[in-house]
Image 1: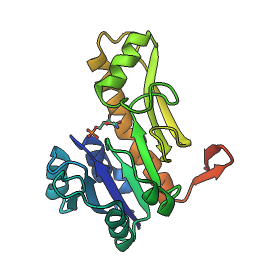
Image 2: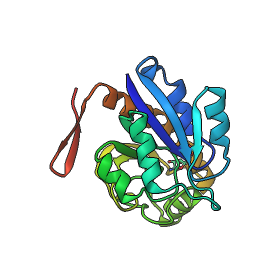
Image 3: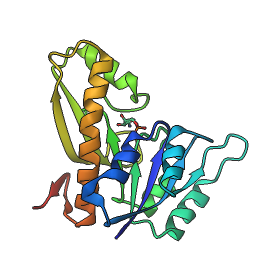
Length: 202
Ligand code: GRF
C-alpha cells in the first residue's frame, strides 16, 4: 500500500481519476489532500471520499513550508502527486521528497511549460502555435516549474480541433488515464531513473 498526498488548486478531476481508478484499487491510501486555496471544488471530492484536506495557503496565516513537510512526513507519505497545483513547491519539500513528487502537465513538455503556463494559458498557447499535436506529461518535480525529468507522455492529435477549449477537454481525458497509470507504476516500483532519463520497466 502506497501512502499518497495529493496537492490541488481547483476542480480536482485528476484527484477523482486517481480515487476512481480500477488500477489503484486497494493499492494506494490517499492520506490527505492539500491546497493553496482556503476552499476549492477538489476539497468536496476529498470530503465525499473521507479524505482529510488541508489548506496551506491561507493568506492570513500561511502554513510554513516546514510545517507542510513535517505533516507529510508524519503521514508516512511515499508519493506526492501535484494534480492541478499552481504554487511552486518549496525547496525544503523537494529536498525531503526528492524523486517522490510528480506533476501532471496538460501539454507535451518541454514545450508549453514554465511559470504562468497553467490551465487555459497552456491550451491557448498550443492552439496559437499551430501545433498539430498536444498531450499530457507526468514528470518529477524539481525546484522550478515543469523542468523535472519526464516520466510518461501521451499525445493527442489536435489537427481537427477548432478551439483551445476543445484541446483542453481532449487532453484532460488523456490526463485522467496517464496519471493513474504512472501512480500504479510507482506502486509496483517500476519507475527507474537512469541519468537524465526515466524508464518504466515492464
Ligand atoms: C489539469 O489540466 C492539470 O494538468 C493541470 O491543471 C489541471 C487541473 O485540473 N496541471 P483538475 O483540477 O485535476 O480538474
